[in-house]
Image (tube, rainbow, N blue to C red; front, side, top):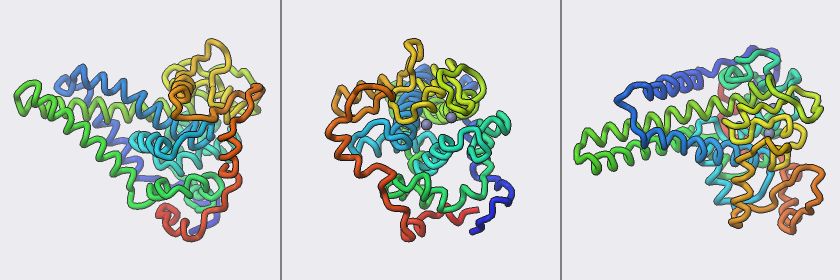
Length: 329
Ligand SMILES: [Zn+2]
Ligand SMILES: [Zn+2]
């Protein structure tokens, strides 16, 4: 494995192919044969279930920033929903995002729009810098994630892609069964299954992609700043709505661990509402308040402090040896 940073960007052709393919198949939604109102409903519900619970609650506020705590089973469930968004593995997502916060809009930022809009939106996903292929990148930014055997297993044998494929097949089979039973016609079942696959999985994957990518692109270009964070992070109302609170990005850069990204009364943060609802149900706890709050950490916070990422040991040689991507070109 090379250690030089002077090597050119590597085109991840498998990522290019998958992103192109899913866009092409997702666009089948405009073909009337694939339309169903239940498919539209699955698309919208999926935007919340997978995009918000998987990426925003799971990958971002929980795994990356530890803005709240919950049981392992629930953490893994959130992460699995995130895996079904095809936004790469938990470790890779977390590593890139933590590096983004460390070097926001500096040359080392993985996806600053100061390069150009395309780069910040999707270019950085398909054009890999040499330093992001090295184990040191993961050791520095995601060692806590890789100490979880479930997340580590995602780095091998494209397991995440299998999880995505299984959930897509389940959507199709559910549509097939219900459509067949409803119409009494096998072809009616095939049509509803195809509709649920196109609207509920493929189109939803595309729209969740662009919503997430917009946080990196639009929310570093257009909007206003409540705080002088020294970077170009902005509060963008459009992304705030589409990404269910993630668009209040300048607030987030100013106070990264806070579970609440909306700081003004009009900065509606639905994701925070979901976290508080889960807290009310007793499923999550130690919800990190905005800086300046007088709230005191709970007993559970003090107990779990010993397992914070900063206190964990580096990735072991054994762990590194199991990570297939470290030698991938
Ligand atoms: Zn940012
Ligand atoms: Zn963040």
